[in-house]
Image 1 (spheres, rainbow, N blue to C red):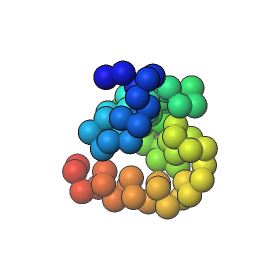
Image 2: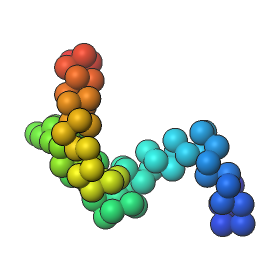
Image 3: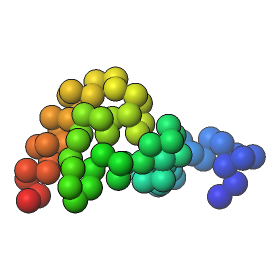
Image 4: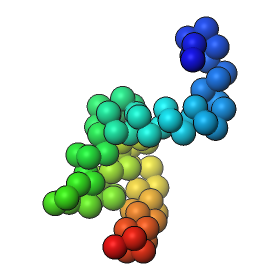
Length: 73
């Protein structure tokens, strides 16, 4: 896809989701990758919020992460 010449394509849910996941995994948004905080040894959902949007609402997001983790393990 040509996001440079057609940036509005990034607003489409299929592309937006892929961009979000890629950016979180690779650290494209803030230089921090999700694996820096969520991995085999550590599940720091609070600090993981920094991957996308600093620590804005980090407490709430951390609680959601813990609920999801507890429901899949």
